[in-house]
Image (tube, rainbow, N blue to C red; front, side, top):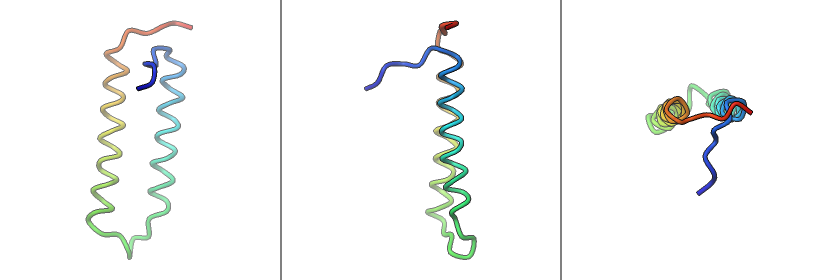
Length: 64
């Protein structure tokens, strides 16, 4: 397992990267070919982002 990110700037960068990945996946989906499993994966990605944000909010931070 990797080292915890405690630097606010690194946390923001991490969240930006994850959001960009989500947007790329969302953009690649073709509405006419989307099924329930695809929607479930998108919801799971959003849930993961929310969980990570909560982890970052509860973690002590470095100011550097």
